[in-house]
Length: 379
Image: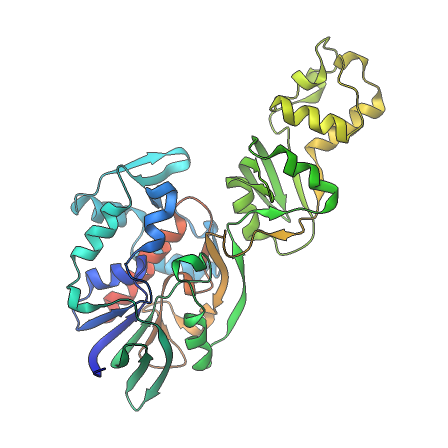
C-alpha cells in the first residue's frame, strides 16, 4: 500500500463531502468506507431525496441559532435550488414547501459524482485514526496512510448503520480535544410503555395530530406502527424529546361542543379513522352510542383525547433514525470557514456537527450550506 499526499482530505462521501468536491479547486481526496457514494441520499424521501425546503430558517434547527443563521445565509435554499437548476436537475415541490427530485435521487448523486474525478475518490476504505504531525494530518486507513495539509470531517452521524455509519467523525474530534454534545437518535419513532401497548394493535393507521413537547408544538400526521408511534409529526417531536412526557391532541380540528347533541354514534363524530375511534372508546371504557346519550363523566374522558399525555419508553434507535442529534460542539467551530478553533486546518461540516434539522429537507440543506462555506474557505 502506497502513501499519498494531497492538499485536502475529506472523510465522507455523503451530501456535504460530494458537494465540497464539486466546488473545490484544490488537490483533494474523498475517503469513504462505503462501496458507493451518496448512500443516504439515494434512499432518502422514498428514493427521491427531499433535498431542501422553500422556507428555511434557523428555528427549523436544533443548535446554536446564530451559528446556523450565518452559514445558511451564505448558501441558502434559493442558491441551492438555482445551482441544481443549472445542473439540469428537475425538482418538484410537495406539501410544506418540500423539494424532491422529480425522477430519482440518483439524478443528484450522479451529478455530484460527475464533477469529481474518479482518482479523487477512495471508497471501501475505513479510517482507523488520524494524527497531526507538524503541519500535516496523517490518516491511517485500511488502504494505507494518507497525508494532507487540510482535513475535512464530513462523516455524518450514527443513523443508518446499515449504510456504513460509524463514530469516526466523533472519534477524530475527540482525539483533537473537541467536545461532543450528547448523541441520540433523531427524526425517529417512539416506543411505548405498557399502558400504550394498544397502540401497536393499530399499526398502519394514520391520523392528523398536534404534539406538544415542552414549549414546542408540531402539527402533522401520526402513524401507528408495530413498535409504537411514527409518522412526520412524531419524527419532528423526537428532536425535542429526551425523556419525560409529551402531549398529543388526537382531535386537533374538532370542537367537541358541536357534536354533543348529535344522535349519531360518537365513533362516527370524532373525525378520526373508525378503528382508531373505537379503540379509544374501549380504552376509555365508553360504550359506542349516540353522543347525546353520553354522561358528563364520559365527555371528560373523551376530552382527554385532546390532551393525551404519556411518556414514551424510548425511540426506535439509530437503525430507524434519519439523523443523529448532538455532535461536535459548534462553539469550538469558526462559522466563517467551518474550521476548528482548536486545531488549525481541521474542518467539520454536515451532520457530524451539533446542528440537526427538522423533517422536510432541512438536513440536506445544512449539508450543502456548510460544505459551501468550507469549500469557499479552502482554495
